[in-house]
Length: 457
Image (cartoon, rainbow, N blue to C red; front, side, top):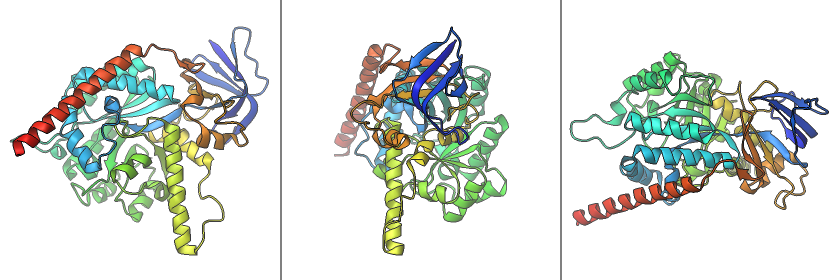
């Protein structure tokens, strides 16, 4: 099957190809086979006139807890401390496998609707294998490309139980997934590990988890920051053992010092920043600027739909605006004036949610740019609408003006998931199921907290 896109501004995010005015992209089966002008597709190709719209690589949401889709708005006014208390020690325990399936499937479909074709799904509410399998099934049925990062829940321990920071990642679950549902390393949904890391586990657990990920060749992602570390100095031991590299992904990154940041970036460690949520909940200022300063890879993620929107264009604008603001403030303090020009371009910001996001998930050999040979993950933006016209600088228009209303068509591995502004799957029943699940869980939490308050008095 061949598909030829014509009459488009093509933003490839490939340095060798750049941008093409009135360009064309030829897709055959699941791959991009050519980018250019006057391409020959053959009589059997479907020709799609983009009407002067903009073709971009599919967006990459490098970090999201998709299981929280049914909790939209619930955590919008919570600090990080409240989030830990209400979610990990309350709401999470109320999820059945069906709740996980519904939230993950509908959350992934919403990502497709918004132009995200690849999702880093950081699943850390899986107390049973059934919860894990439900999340994987939801991702597969959505049609999105995903790195399923298998995590572990974080409840308060019951009497006689160890704290979650003392429990190594379950080897048997990694082995089970690699032998079963996620056995195909070239599949749309593949496996990564959402480990506790030095900030949230003991040194012994940290070293075991790093070793497990390396044994199976998996990306190991971990949160960093948010309160005191469980094992201060553990990163020093990780470094001393030579465990850092491109297969290590740090989420957030606050509390790493400048020397660590320099060494981590030099070793290829990637960073997934969730700028809007970090500022909202109290993590601290995003580390975007520090990672850039040391030549590291910046990727972005929504993090929590229980707090904010799942739209990656909004996340990119938030990251860009916040870091420009920090840079401008530093220049005023150090030089007595704002910089002579912007410290970050919109091109770089678009890279954070395309090619750099792919690097963070270890998928940049497959996706992230419109490069012949890569998977055909792409998005057609209707730039003829009022909110984007006139398009004077296409990349800036994509980053600064685009909204959900402009996401016309979405393709993953050569298959349309959205076309002509409409998703190609029935979502009505799923929306009803998501609402019922979310309302029930939220009501149960409120009832429990009301009872606890009453008992305390």
